[in-house]
Every structure is written in structure tokens, then in C-alpha cells.
Length: 435
Image (tube, rainbow, N blue to C red; front, side, top):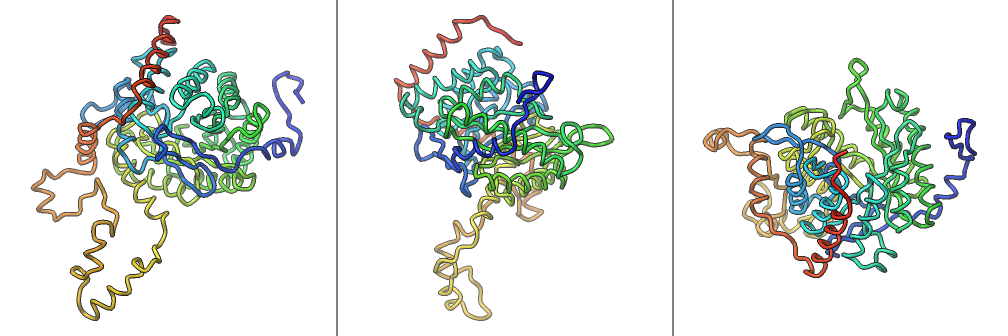
């Protein structure tokens, strides 16, 4: 039912829910290395890097516009980071490459520099189609037709609008049986009511209509209920992060996703800080903790987010990844196996002695506790002798060491040649455009 304005769509009560009965409760996104496949839904949580920033930040240069070299660097870092299950999508926006061609370089970077699953381009329907074509070169036409090899982000233009670009990309991916994350982007107070319940009601309506549309395009196409909910300062209008209200929105939305039987996307390591400082750390800790506690299935922005999403931070990336690794150990729960209960060790050591030299400790000490890649727990004197570095300075060295040690995963030479030929043909077909 279209409203009198010719633009507003009124969906009858129950129709969206009925259409969503054909959406899968979980699905596997395939990577070109099958060992990297990820399950999205049914209690699994997949972590992916930051998405979308036009700037990068590091301690050496400060803040500047991102380039394709930065994009490649973040793909490499995600590939080398065990806590990142996914290569992500627009890990930063490479402004040195023409707008109408950069998606080709970005998708190729994910395919060539990593063997983890990745996200597709959504900035125009034809760019989504290019992504599907590149996936078919890698996986084969029939495999892509029958399996999810791409996931993509479809944002609602809240309040209650889906624009032509997003709907166009949705049509391409859903028709190709590839997964859409239908995600209202909400800054409460500006794009939704100031209350938690009002915000949840609005975003649930937006998400249901978007997800139902994917099922109209192709029944059974994989789809994810996404939310990005944050608050704003009622004094300045600036977005705020790490506050309690967005966590409540996340918890309520996660329960609604489970109720309607689709996977859920939200959360991340979000902050408003411009640099990797204490504010960045505590705001990110708040948001990633809510993400884990809420049972989110697909987590964008798990590493690298700075400045309210305007910058991808090199130091922030490895600091966040360290925290996400800790969260994953926490989510693993308590080991109640015979080794985990350690009764033999308790009997061996007995009263008044220590466990450092016992057989159980010797057998388990390498994996007994999470070992941070960033934290310094040495004496003051040793810390001082090593340069009195803070966490960001240690992170600066870590990401540089990781890039220096990077080795690209193997790829079939024929596939690589076909990808490069496809990219060259597409680039030659149109002139460069930067708008």
C-alpha cells in the first residue's frame, strides 16, 4: 500500500514476518581457503574490522586521508590477526583511486592479500555486480549460485528510508544468493526518538521491511538483521559512544533477531576519541563487552575504529584485536575436562607448596592464560629501561612488525590472471571519476 505522497510504503501487519519465514536462521560464508569459512548465526560470533572511514591515523603521521596502500595494509593486518575471523569490507576509503573504479582494487585486495571471507561493494548496483563476477572467477559460477561467498552492508537511511543505491545493491546480491546485512544506521535523538524503546521500535520496523524485501527478490537468500545504534550529545549534536543506552538498544534488538529467527549484526570497538588514548580504550571496552554479552553473530568495527568512525587507526587496530582475543577466551567458558579440573595437580602439590614446577603446570603453561600482545606487566625498572613506552607506542611497533613479516597466501595463478584481466577490462571501459 503506497501512501498519498507516492513514496511512503505501508506494510500490512504480519506481512514482513511471513516473508521472513524463508530466510535461513544461519548460513556459512565461504572463504577461498575453506579452513577460513565462517558460520553466521546459531550462537556463533564472527569478528570483522572497521568499515568505512575516509581517514587513517597513526602515531607517525597523525590523521590523513586514506590511500589504497592503507587499504592493503589493513587487509594484511586482518589476515595476520587470529581474532579477526573476517577480512571485512571498506576497511578504509582509498581516496587516491577513482570512485567508479576503486571497488575493483578493494575487492581484489581482499581476495589476493587474504584468504578469509570478505564483504562486497554496495556503492552502486553495477559495482555489486562486479563483486559477484569476481567471486565467480574465484569460486566458480555454480558454487556462487548455491553458496554464500559474499556478505554486504545495506544501510537504511533512517528514519524509515531506503535509498535507490542501497536497494539496487540489495537486489543484485539477493538475486545472486549472497548475504545482505540490512542495518538501520541510527544516531538516537537525531535519526530516531531519544528513548531506547522508541529507537528499537523504529529500527525493528526498518530492518524487517529491508529483510523482507530480500526474500521477495529471492526466497531463501541469506540475510542478517543489523543495527548500528548510537546516541548524540544533546548539547552539541555530536555522536557519543560507550554510553549505556546504545547497549540497551543492542540487547533488545538481539532478542528480536532471535525471536524472528535470523542472524544478528551490531556492536564493535566503538569510540569517539581521535587518538588511541584512555577514552578510546574505555569506550571501546564498553561497546565490545555489550557486543559479546548480547550474543551478536556478525561484528563489524571490531578493530580499528577511531573518531566516531571517521578514521581507521593502525595502533587502535592491534589494540582492539588484543581485546577481542580476550573476549573470545571469555566466551569460551570454563574447561571442565579432566585436564581443566586439574585434580592430579592438586593432589601432587598438596598443602603449603606451589604449582610452578608440577607436571600439570609444565604441560599447560604455554596456553594456560591469555597472553596480551600489547600490555606491559614487567617491573617499573624494566619498563623504564625499555623506553618507558605507553600502550599506543607498543602498538605502533607491533603493527609495523606485522606488516614487515606479512606473507601473502597462495592463490591459483590462473585465477589471479583472470581477476586482473577482468579488472583491466572494467577500468578501460570508462573514464576515471572522483565524484
